[in-house]
Amino acid sequence: MESQDIIEKVKIGVVKIFTPGGLGTRFFLCRSISTELIGIATAYHVVDHANEWQEPIKIYHQESNKTVLLSHTERAILGSRDLDTASIVFNPKEIQFPQNIVIS
Image (tube, rainbow, N blue to C red; front, side, top):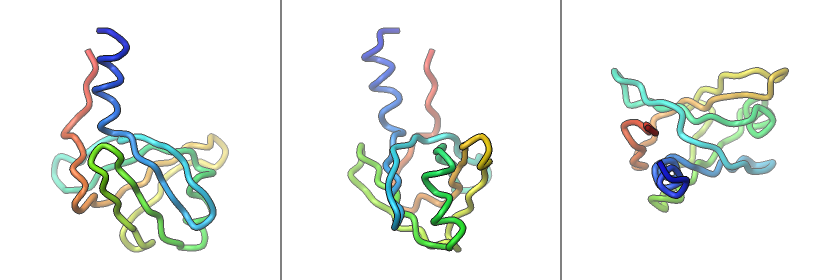
């Protein structure tokens, strides 16, 4: 598979994460089979302050040009400060994320 083909497959899952203190670019990680929830992979430092202070997080999906604003009660953040890895788990509402992203 050519690198441009890979980029086209992956870019549908790329998002920007905005918090009151900053932003980061991250990507779609997984979708629950039994619920509408999805996971977004990110660096822990991007969401650490917003998580600790229960601030809102805005997710912008460039491919669809849609944004969702999540209060602290509408999302969960799981991760490790030591490894600087985290995932944001939430219901994407009107953002249409892919069922899966498979690169073969």
